[in-house]
Length: 102
Image (cartoon, rainbow, N blue to C red; front, side):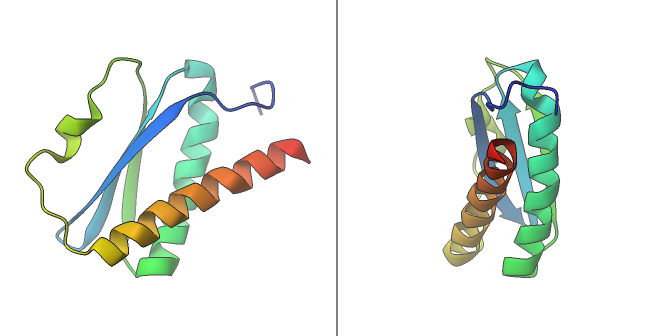
């Protein structure tokens, strides 16, 4: 792991479109990008496990990107699925943080 044991700021947005989960993960610091890419990979597996939907999460390093533009004018297919997606993302981050602490 390339960082000092702490993950920097990140923001994420998800949408369900045509039965597939699409996500965008914005990372503030370039040094954290690889760690968050691993979190995104794990999160895709958890999303599939929890919702039965495949997922594609793109990670980008930017401090100025407007995440609201990612899902502008999109309606969600299922609030329940979005809850499960958010839960999967949080669990993926928690697992990564726990791995750093070990």
